Length: 239
Image (tube, rainbow, N blue to C red; front, side):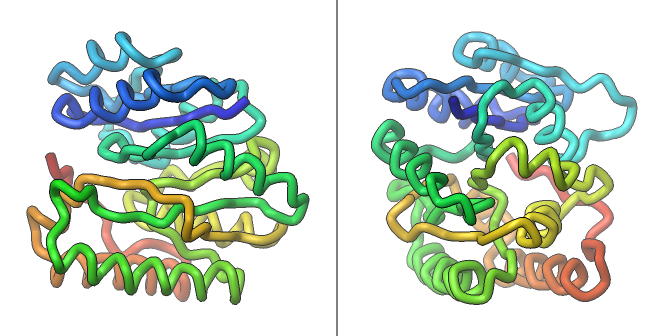
């Protein structure tokens, strides 16, 4: 069984599309777990309508996305974990995720990453250009060098391996995905599948602009690789 874990915070504008598509089309054994960081809109209402489990954060400080993902993993019963962002959609999920699951028949594989694109209805030329380059970079860094680089939109791994390395670092507000892969790569191989497509809204780039977002990505990844922590101490919520 697969456990699909989706952290949320005020995601009413996108969450129903994500969950409705999964519930309507996904027939392979699965569970959908929503971990909510104290939403004040209709996110919880939507989650309760579609998800198998809804976990609400009870802490005082703002929940990091790493905490949300870890909280979901603690509730997960699946042998495979998928961490998915709330504004992401998986086309033909039965076919797509069956392909993904089959790849874990390779005992050396510890983590699988998807080819990320902005959804066609939201995509700009800049989106297409950036993600063409970025996805190609991920092929080099993961499939060739096994270095461990990823966006956070979609990551899939064995639950046992995730627990072996201790899950996400909850102190990080950004680059938590890169940091996790840096530990997972010690257990085996990392891979991005160019035929495993996942679409997202592109909302952050559209809100703050690609030059600013690319500089943020670079700084966080650089600091994580060479100093062991992200550059940013806070990651602004974009809705």
